[in-house]
Length: 240
Image 1 (cartoon, rainbow, N blue to C red):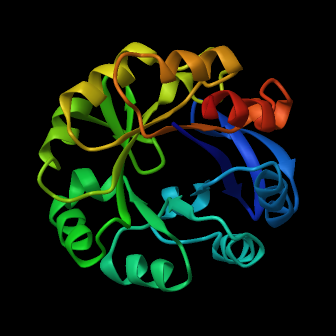
Image 2: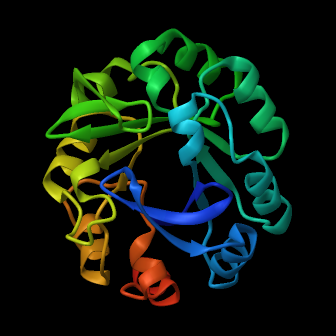
């Protein structure tokens, strides 16, 4: 199971939100590229990047820090936030991103997801962010009636590389991941699933690893910044 350190970008800084609320942002670094290098030096195999401003704006906003991270690091990175048309997908992948994450458009324009997955095999993931099992879009600001599992199943034959499932109520709260819901989603589809939201300790990582279904990986942000989770120790534990 891959551990994806998260770098969430707001106004050019690396921050973490509490349950997706922009006004509850904690700044952890004024130099996201330096933070990314620190994660890579600790041994991470991937980076998970989010353009928070972009998620609300519907178009990339934090392009400069993302490009700085890509220039500074030699591990693959995936990015979500504000990626809502083919031109933006093509642009990001041409700049060296390994994978784009499509969230809002997975609900509003699923045809784009399918077209992108065909055009860029292995480089398109679907981000499914949910509260109480229902998908939220546009930076989690808009609630929908779409069931998270139903949405995941709808892309079963689309060729997407992964589904990143976030329990919004757990995100940044340091209260542990929703292991049960994540495992249930992973059992419902053949697509690799990456867990996100609430990982706050080594025990949380082990719980996800041993949840009874093989997850592709998990994302952690605040716990790494706060020191509740040591990246080197976590990577070593997952490698055992």
